[in-house]
Length: 78
Image (cartoon, rainbow, N blue to C red; front, side, top):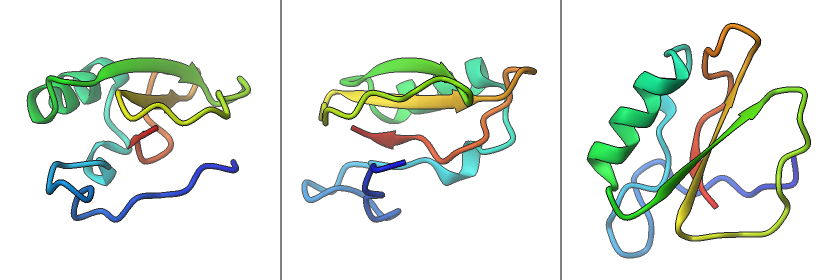
């Protein structure tokens, strides 16, 4: 874990910074939604069994999925 969760309403600049609504979606569909909301960020896909990066990157959204490629955690900027 170790990653702070930004406010669901958005970041300091008013842009969206988390996507709780995509939990339970297929990872690629979640990626499409996030890219529509924030075309300025890159998407990184991880399995729930993989260690996540610990460095903060304001230009990245991490999507964590299960073995069926379903999102299991709220994707956030970082």
